[in-house]
Image 1 (cartoon, each protein chain N blue to C red):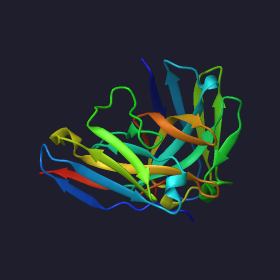
Image 2 (image 1 turned 180 degrees about the horizontal axis):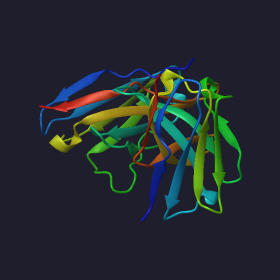
Image 3 (image 1 turned 60 degrees about the vertical axis):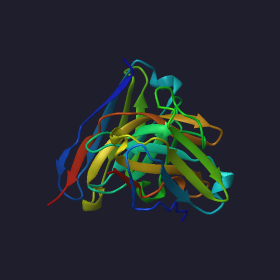
Length: 120
Length: 107
């Protein structure tokens, strides 16, 4: 079955770090682009970052420098390292498969999401 | 920064047509994608490249993009179509942008 399963969310204090993991099954991440999209409570979707199978990354300006996407093709995994977390980073983080079309991507497969809560 | 504007809500009677718009500067020059998110669930892609339906998406979902307005149309709306719908496009500076979402209520 083709699916994505996220893990690693939880409750952290402002300024702390967290690493989210995304396990892919039914396809290989090395042949695809993978991305993270987040959603604050009761709010809309916000793109975070994209990584190619070769390790090239693109990130939203607002999170550059704090969030880093990476992948482990041998484990078919994608990660999101989040540092210096802020209260406004609270939300559900979705792992997605990104389909590239020219210079753009869209997201055709989504995981169930993992909840990150940043609070003192 | 680049913005996509959607109506906050749309109400439709069962069997009628729901029309959800998404507007942005020079939008007709970009591809638009649409996602459906039912309450408590992950988003699902329903339209890509303006008007293409992924496998498994019912034919009642269709899309268009012209005159800087992208439109998602649900023909013969069913109660199961009640959800939030988000449009998405790309901008060379902001990269990926989502609209704020439209809540579709089937009365």
